[in-house]
Length: 543
DNA sequence: ACGAAATAG
DNA sequence: CGTTCTATTTCGT
Image 1 (cartoon, rainbow, N blue to C red):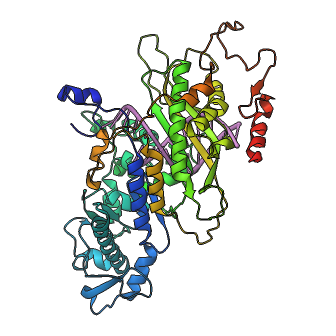
Image 2: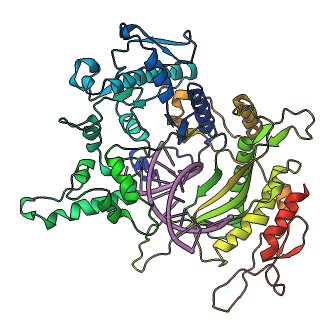
Image 3: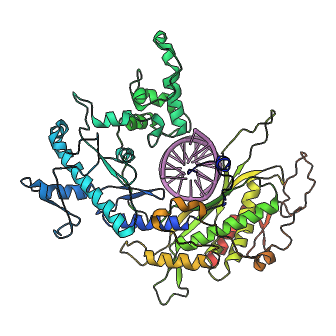
């Protein structure tokens, strides 16, 4: 069995395979944060950008600048790489006449002996420095954290990411000069031209298809007589770049239009020429949103929706506690915890399963729809039990949002639900030092929060984490919960009403004759719908 | 501010 | 190439 294999295929090959539904990403998140922090510790600029759980961009321009100036031109093969400014004792020895393996083009790990060196000596030495730094980082990562890694070294995010795909796993690749086209083609052009158009980061499915359509359907127009056989299917960057009249303007015509990113033509033209001016972002302390979602084979009744909303809300609140709640060092504080950020908005998204077509087929759609509103402040309360907060959130926010999304009482069938808190407002903090959070505290928190409802927690060595995903058991709430039942009362029993205006059943408004009134879960007041957000803000100020 | 779309791991 | 559970950025309104 292979990763990403479809379950049907897996069952055919191995009928006895045990499929465990769900996943527990907490440990991946923790590992990701630790490695991210570790790497940030090596930068001087703080420019470390995380892409997913297992990739980072590092801008080490300043470190390379410094060490370039430090080089002794008379004895390059016995150089010392300083990891810190003004500290000649911290660093490592290296041979500045050689690239640390590997390099693209391959077989050119001694760039000074090849024509590429004389072309741009300054860039060559800088890439040599980068390659040795990368090697040192990979070694440190393995020795100190127990993770192997793969690195790409070049002059921008695009090229370093692409060149990092060579020599996987546990290797590194430096894209050698020349980077400028002259009498000979630059390595940038040679390298990037080999790629399928859709493999370029920033060119996803939609844009790739539109470019392919342009490149593949037009050849018929000029000199078709020379083209035989099956139509070429794959379109490389070279095919696009060399297509007649190709340039930023044509690309803008192909890709522009309503909804498209502004200047998309120029941006894509830059990408296929290896040009990428985007900065490596500085480390962020806070994510900008936290979301939880689950997919379903069939979700079409309100009691089930309520159940799932509770599950999702429970996970979300726990995530908020883990990521946004920190131990308060202030002994005078009433609570030993404090929120380091307050999300201000909650969003509910669903993915409705499209109805069957006339011919019985189902047009697959992955389109999501969403509604959002203010996140009530009671979610930051720490006195009530978590189930109480969850239930209040479900009733006060999620159910109303759900009704906005799906006004019909039935007839829908959802394949996915997602709850997201966003719009994070950082809470005032005493630490002006700009220091990040203490990771050890984070772990303590995570353990404390999750211990009581962890079902199984195997010991998995770090290297095995990636492959062990399928056997990590999803944690689930332990038992029925009285507080929740208590809160819901009979509210989870739904009586279809015969609202016959257009033959489709609509949700009853909260009060039949009190049109547009909502009941506040905090104070039971009946509030006009338009005033409800303001009313919730009122409660949020009480605390 | 909100909702959709595109992209990515 | 498509799926799942995330997360970010950008556009139009």
